[in-house]
Length: 191
Image (cartoon, rainbow, N blue to C red):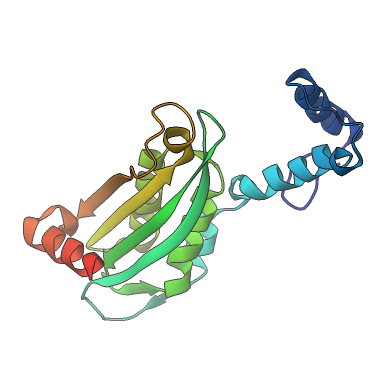
């Protein structure tokens, strides 16, 4: 049986989780830990719900014709994701822009797109490109720009342990590859 996010919730899966925690030394005889395997599976299901959502269908459901042709930006979109290498969170802000070519999209759909792709096991570089390519494919705009700034717990709480480090990635398609457009976008997201 699968829950609403598609993760199996049967006793076998919960037993595997309990076995995993037992192998690292967790003592489940304490009352406080009794439901930890179940809660862990619920959390993992939530963190990976993006695998069960269709970004193309979501975007095309909110397209409408409009002759507007200036840059549209939604900035400071908060997101949380799991690093596919260590299953540790990374989080930050995503800035998205596009220059319409006859079609607009509901502004909240850009934030929703970030949510769909960030709720998967990810690397920041791929997340950045997936957002840009999905917008480019479905809107067919003159250009798309995506910049993500994130903090990675795999660098903060393990490994090099650099608490103030941030990673910045970008994907610039179409008109955003032109220096003037790129500079306008970067200047506007800094404000």
